[in-house]
Amino acid sequence: MITNIQSLNYTTTSATASTASTDITGKDEFLKLLTTQLKYQDPTAPMDNKDFLAQLAQFSSLEQLLNVNGNLQANFLALQSLNNSSATDFIGKTVKATGNSVSLVENASVPISYSLAGAAEATVSIYDSNGNLVRTLDSEWQSSGDNQMLWDGKDSSGNALAPGKYTFSVSAKDTDDNSVTATGYLSGKITGVKFVNGNPVLMMGDTEISFSDIYEING
Image (cartoon, rainbow, N blue to C red):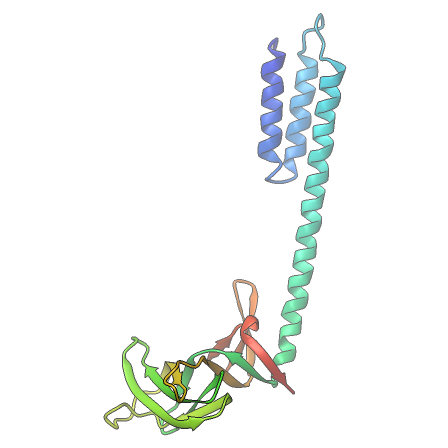
């Protein structure tokens, strides 16, 4: 027979705290402990009404929290499904997105796009997949806003490079040799959508575009 009511009270409260963060079986465990406590309590010293009401209030709070959690999960799944469906609307649209990668195709030149915060002369540094610098391009004076330089797909020695993905960085300086902010971007049509860990990612050819990187959309 259980005679240590305080010990059982502690066990019940602990069980409530641990099961509240798991799943619906927490309610069953709570009721089982409460029923056992009432069954084996000392009849000469029954549980105080205040203690009993306090435990019932704990149970009510636990049930409400579990119901709220279930509703939140259902709403999250609904929103995720809506976002996944909406992502396909981007297919065929032309977008601009911040980024610093380009795909080199055999026997083709690649436009490298960037935006300048002010008029400047720009330098584009191109790197292979291992991070090795393969080519540097210098521009003449360019105005602020969107600009491009065309890369012929060759390295600094004039050798054609293998097709694949390359990255670039842009630096720029004004007439006073002060640095001017330059931001690389990608521009092109969205060709598809893929899902990474359940989240939609737009595809521009074989380049992945995150929604958070898009800053302009055209039909």
